[in-house]
Image (cartoon, rainbow, N blue to C red; front, side, top):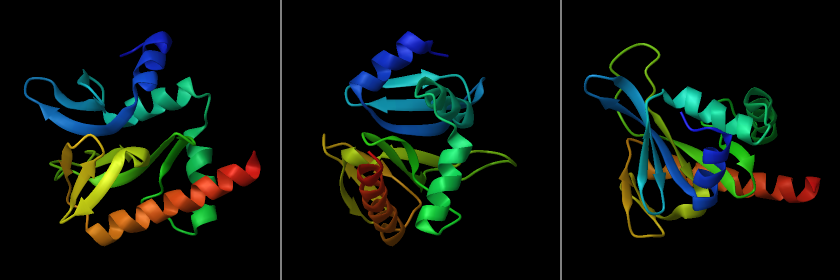
Length: 154
């Protein structure tokens, strides 16, 4: 697991997406997709998201609670670390067991297009999802409202 200084370097390079994957012989791990490479972290996605929140000195539960009320929705709440790091939630795999993460988190600022459940990044790469275009676009609209809220609170 990266240390605080390593998280700083990772975040400076820009996290495009954070996804749960299965690794044979290990189990549930997380891939952090950067603009120029992928980093495999041998922890589940909840732990990785929690550690990023610690880097930002952020209470993730309180952030989700606030934005759930602000957006008046209970599911698929964007993950807000700061104005540069707002992640939408998309389903990227079929879970095999209970408490198995199926949701990936995609940084909204890297999304260029959405078509047929495929998210196109602004660097030309793509991410296949099991989420409808309508839901992805609705989540991106939520990000717009969150950015307005962040501007008003500064």
